[in-house]
Image (cartoon, rainbow, N blue to C red; front, side, top):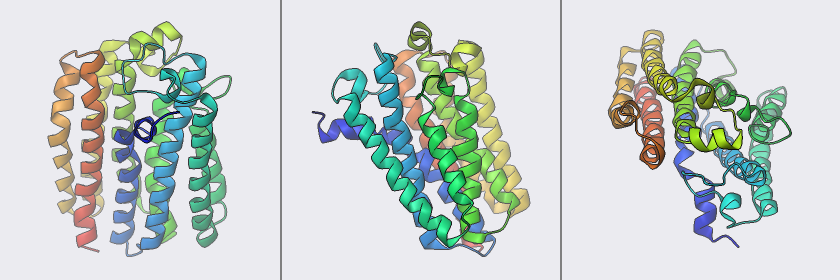
Length: 291
């Protein structure tokens, strides 16, 4: 049986900023628009965190039973390491999905029932990233789906459940948050190019190759910076404080551009996650102060 510490590692807490950041950014936009509802923001956070943990366990299960994690360089995987049975990890994933569904249903009941469909699509996308017979994570589509669901859907959805209106700053914030969420996956897949190639896992990094994947990471950082400017133009110039995300991201950029491989790329995951959270918090602070 896996220990509690191993289950915690399996949940991959370093990826959780990708769940917190869109809720912070979306709630700040809602507050600036005069429509923040804090209990809905809290429920949106539960949904985001539960989905993030669910997709992490689901990936652990699916990659583990396929044997993709054999010889893995990164953080420990529960199934791949033999610390937990595939059935136990699958149950953990479904429990997290269930928690997200309950919180999501409350939000839908208090906002609009069509949001149930959005939630169902999000959970299906989370499972089939590496699950099913033709997982899209093996077809170089992982980054696209991360941008859509951990960027566009998460940020715009968080704003909408509170304001029930369309807000353009939410779209710009979604682009910034989504770009950095993609960057986390990009560097994860950059690290795993050798093992993914051997296992037949055709990620975007495998398709692009080492050098172009590193360029993509830089491009996503630039997109996140441009999104800060877009939010500032649409709201207040104080939102340019969000460019401070480049400070925690700088070491990650240096490491990626240096040609580091394998274990040397592991710290970049945490650094990118911190940069994403910094983006959201620094952009949110002036929007909340001026609400």
